[in-house]
Length: 318
Image 1 (tube, helix red, strand yellow):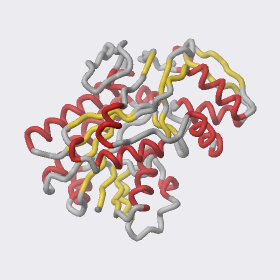
Image 2 (cartoon, one colour):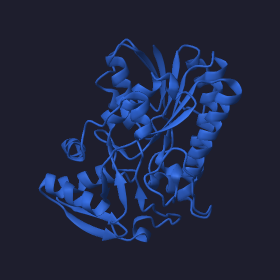
Image 3 (spheres, rainbow, N blue to C red):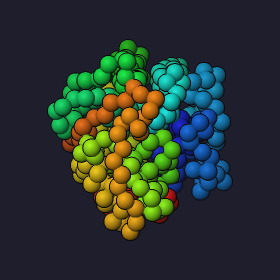
Image 4 (cartoon, rainbow, N blue to C red):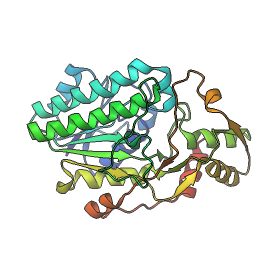
């Protein structure tokens, strides 16, 4: 197979590109390197089966030409991280909405290419029910809180992808990622585990936003890639939305304590949301726990790497 991977120089994208090449596929990457880096692809940069296009998923001509040469599309390109979304509000919305529209249209025009759309647990919003299942309602905050624009734009991406599937027979699979982490994830956009690990390695303070009792479930990027590969090979996943996440729920303060224990250094510091996000427009989710039974049922996928393995991998490269 020849895959087009948008955002292929990013954190998740680069691991996916490596996995596809390792099994013998060819890959074309589109990435403007606004948050990704070609350094993420250094281990495979010499491959004759890898073609890199420095460009945007929002560029009609670039995407159209790329889709003419491939067998399937994996669309990962999107705005990254709460900090960036609050700092670059217009660009974040446009990147998510226009990029997905351009990719879907081109994939349809070139023979209805199989299409994987990377979505996010953010679309569940402030839903209090837990764990989150794919058919649950979305409960988003007020439009005056720009933090929810990311969730809204990704939810619209899902609506658009499913509309292309129903009306234009595009074979679409949607994966909702829950807190994917691991090597190459940057601490610069507010991602909590690489931020904690970088601080611990400096014997510095790990900033806990709010009271630290908000909980998350983390998944190693290698397990996430295994899930994506399983889903794109699963005919019954076409037209479906599937959670991709980990099974261990942990409070953020407890995560910080575990990082300090494994690093052997660092300390916790509580920081208010107003201090962490002085630009305003932020509101947090208290719990974010996925029901991953649909993924397991469809593909037989199982999580292989636990939270300590994720922390150790992040510490090794922090």
